Amino acid sequence: MLIERDLPLKLDALLFVAAGIRGFSEDDANQVSVFMFERLSGMLREQGYSAQEIDAVVGLRPQRLGEIPKLLAAVRAFADLPEAPALAAANKRVGNILKKAEGEVGNAADSARFVETAETALFAALGEIAPRADAAFAAGDYTASLQALAALKAPVDAFFDSVMVNADDPALKANRLALLNQLHRTMNKVADLSRLAA
Image 1 (cartoon, rainbow, N blue to C red):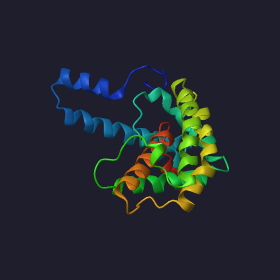
Image 2 (image 1 turned 60 degrees about the vertical axis):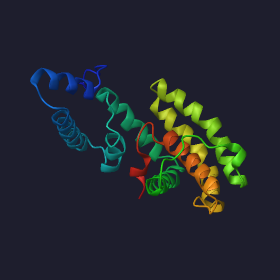
Image 3 (image 1 turned 120 degrees about the vertical axis):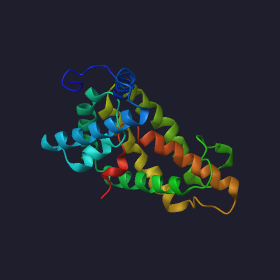
């Protein structure tokens, strides 16, 4: 019903209210949410969406279920772009680097600390592309939001070709991790693009 009628309701908020009425715990509500997303994944497979497309969208547990058809359409359109395989692979690599990082990773890089040209170029590209992608996302144009990311392929490739993220200098390493964190957040608003990697 939430999808078919495109109701502007957030799933976890609904479950929280229901849990309060029925006397369930927050953990119970979370288990119901997990179950619902599992059932939703099965329903979407029956509708012809691929496992990768579903995982990319459902993996982020979008709260407005009525948005899911638009999110899936955006992921499908993105996957058809020539830049998509490289960006999906890079996104997976970034996610793995951030998971292995020790301590808290910063949210924003300091451009004054850049040493390599490729760092500066990626930072500049993010500064140009992220606002366009974010604006399209906020407007509900998920396809445009993802397609804006195509322009990141060249600077992302250059970064990984010439920059050592785990530098010996702790400050340099922390700044590079913060830059990758910015990239990761920008790339994963619509869907978890790493799920599209081969």
